[in-house]
Length: 385
Length: 227
Ligand SMILES: Nc1ncnc2c1ncn2[C@@H]1O[C@H](COP(=O)(O)OP(=O)(O)O)[C@@H](O)[C@H]1O
Ligand SMILES: [Mg+2]
Image 1 (cartoon, rainbow over the protein chains, first blue to last red):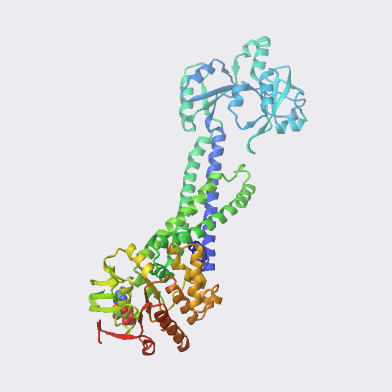
Image 2 (image 1 turned 120 degrees about the vertical axis):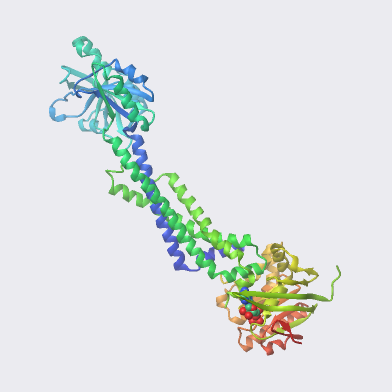
């Protein structure tokens, strides 16, 4: 239809003005996309990290254990989803210089609580089946050249003797923030051995790991757990995996709200920019719209003409902004690796960008279109010449 | 309804504008007829209300009171939408400043009114070529208005005005922006539209030379005809 040609021709009639408007929209869409990616990245990392994981330990000190009997009690607490436990083993591999963290853990629940450990399915099964099996981080396995099936001997420090394990699985981090240098084996293996060699040390765990259903409830659950053991021989302290995290969250939450607000201010700004451009162009074309009306064109057709032009401009800007978002995001990722190990643009953000482009085009043309439609023909024709 | 001899019947038209405190009466109780096939020139000094009167007859402005019958229809009672359709069917417009759409070629400008009809693409093309042929601009049909002279642009405008085959052509100072030669071309074309196609033409002008092309001249002064 001839209206299409007019829409596109009109949109690029003032090349400089249109180019500047498109650029403004593109920059705003880019800013919006990056801000949103900051927000989504932040939420993703909070979700992935320990906001839903609590650690319960002996109130006196980390080196004092807790009775295994607490396990069932902690499981009964409201909003507790999964409970795991483990002990710091403190084994030495050949010499003390080879230090790495090694733990005896309740294997299945421990892995359930660490979705950030990515393990091939068959290896996971192999590890869970083999009582003497162990799982190592990819970085650790590489450091010592361990392969699946290798036997590794740790020399006990807290628990005397030489302990033999077979490598059954290697985990990788879901993202760069995950520590890939740890060593886990079955707590059951440790405990069975202790029952024979030193029964007083058996049925004791170094810590409980508690998964809660909702990070917002973490503080409440922690209080309930500690209250439960207040009058027991082993009093507990329960805190988020990184104890500062709760305070950190509430502070960051405020910053995130500000970023969110700014991202909407950005939209308001592009709306103003495009609306201003449309107001200027439609005022200049009052005479042309009057001619079209004279020829019998309807208000709806005039509105489509103006709205189409605004949409061409705002969608061009949105598309340019989207195209720029990817290199900008990867630049961001390079520059801020430590803070944003996974800074990637979500498809939802792109859809939102396009939605904003549409919305801005439509809203920005409402007032100019209304004015162009309302002005009397005789009045519009007088504006010519 | 039988075809009356008069294509336009204006009865007791009044039109005034409010400017601040003052009411300016532009047309004061005007009544007159235009015969079918007439070529009428309306003359008068600047500001005498010529354009206002023409706009009322052409259905692009509304009178305060009175009635206007054009081509057997009382247009004072039509809604905006009906009036738009009525204009598309009945009136061809020629303006002083040509008023072509600058982003469309000559051919597309002439095609513009046809988009509101039910014509097929092929049918439209035939009409456009016939109209451009009549104003002798077939070879310029792919040119944009900015690539045409004033006289040529006005010829495109005439083609646009006649392409839908309206009963009446209205022209507001069609030669007002043209040099003598081009003006003469345009007036010649309009005479042909009148004699060969039988179009009724109402032309506003303050140029006595232009008015000579018309069969009949009426003088408007201070809102009234002085015959
Ligand atoms: N929209 C308007 N508001 C106020 N005054 C107007 C308006 N339109 C026309 N006029 C006045 O009406 C008078 C007649 O205008 P017009 O019909 O354009 O005269 P002409 O075409 O004969 O020069 C002029 O004085 C003009 O200033
Ligand atoms: Mg005038």
